[in-house]
Length: 426
Image (cartoon, rainbow, N blue to C red; front, side):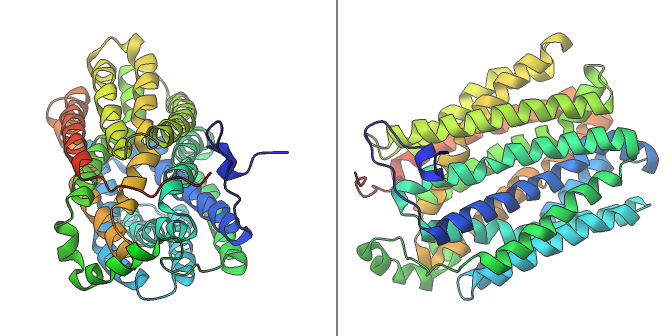
């Protein structure tokens, strides 16, 4: 019989928690939506050379499409965060998933750069809704000790979705034109949004928190965003994630084009290779990172921050080899670099949700998303494209090495403020 999601990350000698049916339904459907969220997002990089050729767009203009998505994402996030702490999140999740799926479907009728720019910006509104509420809902179903494990499952959807996006964008785009992949990505999102509307339930806010924590957090609601800026554990994790997101946003947006230009691959092959690397590294790295962090937490409450910091420094030399090494080394070095970069997926997200409490969690996630996109993947594709237009793409991608270092330093510093968690149930 297949292992349940909780059993997947169970340590030896530890009795796995059972998962109640409402929690399991929410986890499965939200993970499915997260997968489709990233599939839709990464169709564009997978088909980017084809789009760029038809629309006669510069590298900077193509990078600006991703910037448009995250600008609307950032502008929407504060409002959706406020809504999520005051109203039921289920209808908001359904509305957000429906909006980004419809916007993705609309791409089939796009025939100009301006229309594509508007479409990509609209997707950001829908993603901001889902991206804020899903981790908050999951956190209300599972206690702090288990969130690293459960969020690692939820975030496994990122590499799988991204890989499928590269694959669908590159392969279908090469053979059927670049508009067809967006139709393929849009329809499943509408179906899962409908399933969530029918079968998912709304957990009570703070349902998984210890009573003493829930009481303490009533004062933090009054402070709102101001109190979050006075929370060093939350702030260091958020800024460290922002620097990582600058790196990941730049690499994920430009790597198919990099492989096309510097490794001699056609569009379909570049998408297939990158998709294969992303799914293997993403699943293996996310699983291993979540497992290692869960074991390390048994002896060190700073483990979520420390493992995330080491993830950045282990990635650094390998990423440098991808950008500036011989073309023959690009693919194996990229495979190793992505594996280490994905180690932090579950731990770093768990560190952020654990650093705040239930009454302000949607607001905290909204501010986190605002800052990581403002400082991270909103500017990075455009900046890298601009450097590429004036120099070359290697030099543009080299900028991400600086942000990897900054991320690691911030997370090592933030480990000093990691909250002490309740002992594990056995």
